[in-house]
Length: 363
Image (cartoon, rainbow, N blue to C red):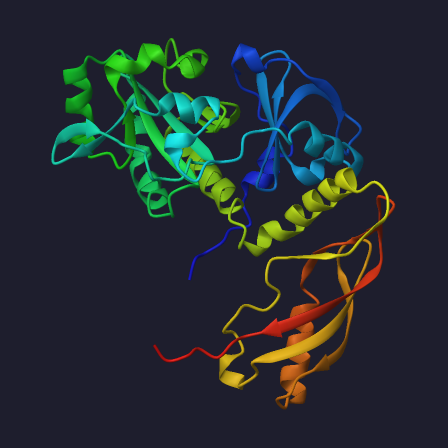
């Protein structure tokens, strides 16, 4: 079973992560967060439960969506709606960083560097660049401290995160030797191709070393600069937590996703009636298999905040014991909803929940 995390990164990102940003993205509108603080930036994309901005003058800002009032988040969703969708095939990526990296990556195979063909792999949602510097004496702290966490991230399904090493001040032979010794479980920027990667140009350290997590456009999300061993661990912990929140099946992200969907629906339907929408699976398929309950219906009362306040009319053709009935009701009350809307305002409503767990058939 896949493990999910509450993502300690959330607290760290409640204040913006400010790093250098490509100049072509440094402009934007004024926005106000839930604390009443204002900032200027261009809405880039909703990355899972996070709102990503390219901020003026040369910084990136990544906020949990709930750090923005609904009205501001609705405006954000409109401003970011033309952002290119993540490509199912990285070869067709339209975003600045992921498109630029295509054709310039290598992998270590059998002690040799070979081209890394991204064709057929999903475009990554997050790109983590590890900038190693031969002339920085402590760069080994980042190199060796990144081995184990990158290995764990490499076990995730393709499409969430790609970890890439960039070597500064290395000749091709020195780079090959360094990577051979490390046995690094990452993709690598081809040394001779580095000057062509203009999106990364502002981030390559003149001195020292660093690791930066980007969205696929090259907007920085957070980073670690000349980190010691503890800071390297903290950076990768933040990456793991952030990536975990991008998984739609992660229940810890459902409340934020519902908030974002509410804002999107307000923007798309300023008038009329919109019915509530369930986020995630309240009861997973297969979870009731041992009870012989294959189907049931229930009426859920959904508050203006998308919370289930009451479960009524729980019925099934099979007999549901009082104990199981109580367990199902308790679980359904944990369901997360996008509330119904009336003329762009959340309202209380009812939702008919129909659980169907089809009995598997013999092959």
